[in-house]
Length: 297
Length: 278
Image (spheres, rainbow over the protein chains, first blue to last red):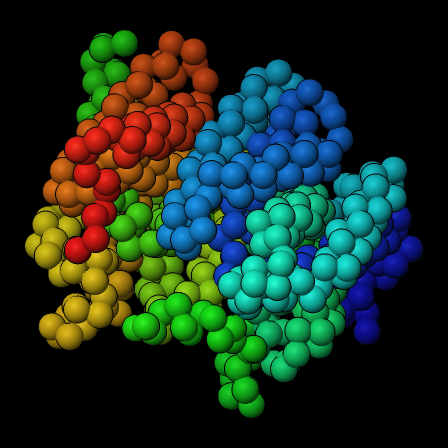
């Protein structure tokens, strides 16, 4: 046991905070990620994460809590993308890309100014790749509350969201405001992404959003089970990542731990690839709409 | 601003802009925006790894971006109606490479400056020796696009017709991803991994929103990319702010201008709308 769990692992305060935050993050992004994958919005999810980076680096510049920076920028970006994005998939990708480019540019500026001002050189690394071990315990209640709000919103909207994801036309015929649902969903996605950004870094949060849900959708039959499996996969990857990162302090180069984010990403990817080993009984619940979109009418 | 030291910057920036405008045009046309974002980011990991091992950064960039392109192409190649899986594979490949980049950067001792330059670009201080590989790779990607111009256009615009004519969409996909990887490995050291993407998407998106003819759009895309880079270099020189900031903002501004022109154009009588029904 001691080879995996270093003595003192569970006695350390930062590690306990990290495990708690990791679980909250993994559950939120696991559940929301299932919708992201079903809706084919992986790119939007990734772009939100990258744009929230603007907020994170801006908050860092003015010495504010980064989480709020991530959150505000993420929600603004979600509104922008929905605003300028057209309904066609390619147009949406381009709109996403343009917002993303502008956001990254601003992030570059903020990080530059921050390093000029404070001469803390590790700033860009922390903001980009996260630092789950240095989350201050004061932030934890806010993180949990944000996660719970996002989960409740998604839980209330589950049926409507699934319907609009799978067949927007049917949803519209039933009187659902597809656009409003889309915006609410993107806002929930922004919350989940900013949680993940705090934990494993803005540019890597896509791993926890897409990886576990894509894995879960390949091995389960119903969206409900997929959400459960996705959350569990996410928690497993995060916790194992934290433990391994803690252990890696004793790996070469000695006296310098490997980043948690790397382990989480690698584990998530291994999980996804494992689903290719055994042929799944039935692939993920594909939306009939998607097939119809591409076949010649 | 035009001293001999800065000349290299202007030359390198212009080469990068021309290539990004060309490659980006097809990226937008083919709907491979996400890949255009993922491959430069993967290249970042390669550069970080190469500098960890102490070999030429260009090798790391080339190896990682081509490996990323092949991985995305092989696992996620678009079959009928599988766009969402394609996106999933791209996203996972992207984060894997970024994760590796984070690992390399954190394991190597001198990280902060290096990471920042690789992610957000460092256009100043490009040496004479660095221009040659950039020029070489630039010509290579331009030729690669020129040779396959027609099949690329055909598979982008009318995939079904292309298949019927015996042009494999899948093969063109992978071919294009490799061209993108080549272009990426030359541009990342200059504009940075995160901003290479805005240079590849902003100008072509703007160009496409004002004209429907592919040749004109391609030329316009190159021109806008050049304008973006030149404005950015000049402003970056004046303010000392990072180049990436100006590239990202200029890309968005040009896109919005393009949308504005189109909105005006569609209201004027006699001006044909972009992409009329065939």
